[in-house]
Length: 434
Ligand code: SF4
Image 1 (cartoon, rainbow, N blue to C red):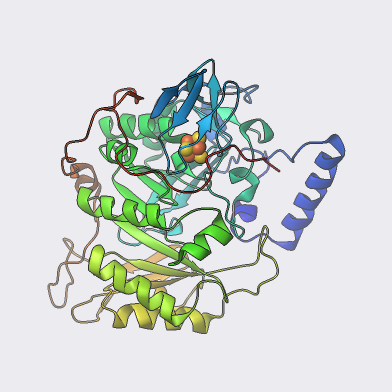
Image 2: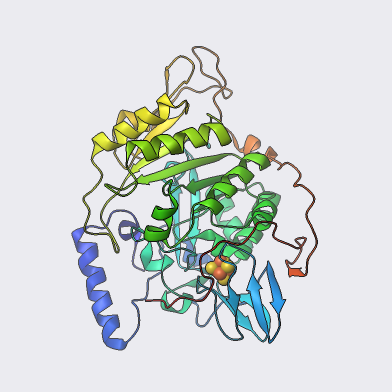
């Protein structure tokens, strides 16, 4: 099978040419290019043959409406979907008044990655995460690095069927402590992620969600009973940026971050800094100020370098000086752990004690060259370093109890009903998939 790893991260000229050819050939057939399941981890040995058709499974978090319509309550879009139609994400379908996910177990990407690649820098540094994805996303960022799977429907990508139990078995047989739901948008394969995380916990495997944070509070709280860490892409700090560049909204993401804070799960933030669009010092300052005030100074912020891709090839890569400026602003606002990302060998990839500035973790790209943290503390001044430093600590996490919620006729499986956040203002109608 093709390895799309390079395509997902920083496409080489050869990758771009290859995809150009694929697009051309597919275009001649009148359909989108099929992405292929990655196999650098050898995972397909665990699965059956390539998936033909759709991996249907009853969806969680939706309401029945008149005339066989349904309303999805998983993410802030709250799509209202007619019979045999799909929601905006293209992976949830109404069949006769019952809502279904179409990607339960439909793995289109799998790799064993360093946890640093997610990036999570305060979560068991130097360990690996079994990283998986299905097709689909609930927003559309013009700068998406994984558009070949996130912006396609499940029948447009090549997938294999892998059960949650097989994922857990793959981790255990390889000695990998963590499952990571990543690459596309795991919120849209919620049911699969939920069941894999639950099965993983039962067998000593942690789970981290790498997400845009576009999810309603109720499903997030239910999911966090099984997760052990989260990374959220905080894409900008203005509604204009979210609307124009991502076809989404900022407010629901801020609400998600506050919910994660309340739950008490470990999480980190990544800000992809794009020249002229979200890199103004004032916007970065406002964002860092909000993070300190609402989430606390110990939530790490990663300012990462943009590379031209997808529908945003007109802008240059982010100057390293801009990342340096973002780091300085955030540190001046009181954020304790601020990183520079996608810049190998930059000193901003290392972890320094916020108490005495001692270097604690040295990173070379995604590799941990040294880690001097002992029992979660700085060996020099003894300051506690926030994070998850062992598998025992990861699995010991239990969320704070959620506040009482109202009841309503939402189909939420084992979950109690009613999403308790007001709907987002973005249209919930299905989109055309390119
Ligand atoms: S875009 Fe969001 S609300 Fe719409 S179907 Fe997908 S998950 Fe549900």
